[in-house]
Length: 275
Ligand code: CMP
Image (tube, rainbow, N blue to C red; front, top):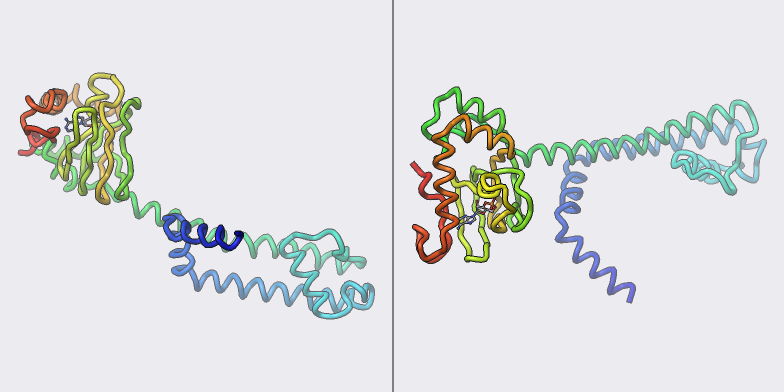
């Protein structure tokens, strides 16, 4: 029974992206982590040997041989002291104990910092950098001059989502509009479904109408998105009326029932914005 549960858990763990990330991090940081293990073993041996030398004869039952002293040192390094752990009786013993505890904090903090930094780097790598060329390539912004594109680079956020991620959920409050830098998403609404690809945008309807999201949007490929927060979006359509008009035209078309939608039976994308 326990074994079946364990096997089931291990199967689940294989598909967990977070565990896979930890596995990758441990593999890539193995040298640094090995150095931590060596430091730990060094600290353990040094603390055990000095404590054995200083208090071995004072507390022979607790520190009288190296295995006992190593157990003491390991417990102090991991700070699980207490119970049958021998409190130092001499001044030198107390100094050694204090140094051992502090070394223990370092020994455990070091690998945590290494893995933590690795996680941070991994997440930073996932969020790509928004560049001028990337924004200039978006059809909606094709007619903008360089200064306007530079302004956009400053306000657009990058977000990369794996395939299967729900980016927008129908009925939620709208807080951003999204432009697809690369990848593909699927729009699912009561009227049907549509696929939007590189250069197209979505999430504009709730921002324009201030109504809840009209559809659920899910990435069907790993997708790089340029995210425009609601306030920046509203300022943008006010400041650049041409862009505002294009976005409104697309939103209007998307609101039409499928039969009257310009792209026919299924829901329409925003091909109209392609230049
Ligand atoms: P919003 O309502 O904010 O959130 C869901 C988004 O899906 C919506 O904005 C549009 O960008 C997009 N969407 C809704 N209906 C359609 C459609 N008919 N064709 C393509 N995209 C759509």
